Each structure stands twice: as C-alpha cells, then as structure tokens.
Image 1 (cartoon, rainbow over the protein chains, first blue to last red):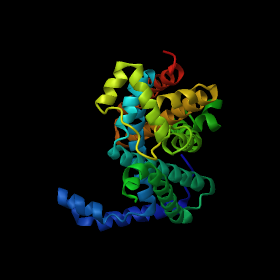
Image 2 (spheres, each protein chain N blue to C red; image 1 turned 30 degrees about the horizontal axis):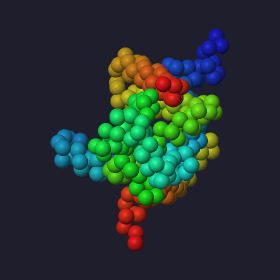
Image 3 (tube, rainbow over the protein chains, first blue to last red; image 1 turned 90 degrees about the vertical axis):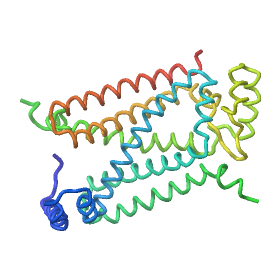
Length: 159
Length: 162
C-alpha cells in the first residue's frame, strides 16, 4: 500500500458519508429513476472527475492501441498501407484524430499530476493542479486539433 | 527470509505493486515517446509527404501495379487536399530504415502495450470480485501484450523487406 495520511483519509470518509446522506431515500427504493437521482446527487469533486476521466481516456486509448497495431500490419504491402491510410483521411476520422489527441493530452497531463502529488503529497493543491491539467490539455488539443482539421474544415472556407 | 522484506515484498506480483511500478516507469517514458510519435506522424512536418509530394507519389503508383491503379480509379486512394500532410509508405520506409528509429518505435510499442494492458488488468481487477477470475484477467492481459508485441515487432522489423 502507498502511504496515505490520516488527515486525507478522514477527508475522504467525510466526502463518502456526505454522498451517502445526500443519496439517502433512493437506496430504499431502487429503480432506474432513483439510480439517476442518486448519481446526480453525487457531488463530483475535482479528484473524482480526474479519476473518472483518467480511466475513460485510458480505456479508449487501449482500445485504439489494439486497432492501431493490428492495422499497421498493412505496412507489409505498400498498396495495402496506402489504402489503410486513405481510410483514416476521411473527415470524420480527422475529428476522431483530434479526440484521440485530447484523450492522450488529458491522460498524459493527469498522469504527471498524479506523479507530482505522489512525490510532494500536497493534497490541498490537487484542485488547482487538476484545473491546470484541464487547461493544458485543452490548449494542446486546440492547437494540435487546428493543425489536423485545417486542410479539411478551415482551408476550403478561406477566400 | 529476505523475500519477505523491503522492495522485494512491496513489488511482488501478488500485491499488484509490480504492475503499478511498471505503469509508472512506462508512463514517464511514454510522455516522451508518445509526444514524439504524435509530433512526427500527426503534425505537418518533414516526416510526412506534403500535398504536392503525395500527389506526385500517387501518379507514380498508377504505373507500378494494377492494384494501385484500381484503388485510385475507385477512389480508395485519394489525392491530398491543398496544405494536407499525408503519412505515406515511402516516408515510413525511409524513417524505419535507420536502426535508431526501429529501436524508438519498438520501445514505444512495448511501453504502450505494458502501460495500457497493465492498466486494463488494474481496471478489470476493480470490477471482478472472484479471485481466480481476476487471475484469468491478468493472464489474458499478458497474453494480449505478448500477441500484439509480436505483431508490432514483426511489422517494424520486416517493413520493406519484400
């Protein structure tokens, strides 16, 4: 186990307790509607949002990695490779490419945030760090994304 | 009982900390390798063909094989838009000709696979309650690592040999 300070553990327990209390009556009457009300009663904190986004982007990237490695087997044949590349030059795939960059950027910056917190253990700074992660990944995604979609969605509309 | 103490115990495979350590090491490495990979393969620069170069390459294709001519006629290989940079076989071959780029790409492949699939094992472990099923999930993830590592290394090492 990693060292967890007693202080942050109590903060964590208090947060959990609050979530359970806020979702109170729904636990006695389970249905899809009460499930939704329970979910919406959760106060999404920076740490939870970071954890959820890190997991979702991670799973998407693993899914992409498998397709990517299997697809690149077409490098064995020049014609097959050019066909493969043309498929991914479709405008819809260009948007997917921007989303891929977004997932990579968030996962990378959030990974650095986790690393920084593990080294310095400044839990009171975590919210600021999370906002920095969001800002940095947005900047990288916007800048890289513009370069990716430029020939497809911007250049045709320029005079 | 040295195996019961210190690093050996903390980073034993049973505690799951070995996976954590490997994900952390590969994660730091991937900051560099994925950054580089995305820069050279997705951003406009000399590792990709410019629109003019690519359209020139396509014209050459038509003479090479009927396969290419057919694909171009059917629009399965399209001309580049103005200002577009395109990944193309020639450029990839040129880059992978050097042993350094082969090493970089294989390192990227192995780091990404280890980081991704060990992360997957960790996620699966969160939702699988049964201990033996969890073991199956870990073995499955390692099998995927081995399979895809083989596929990728064969791709990188054999490109341009036939």
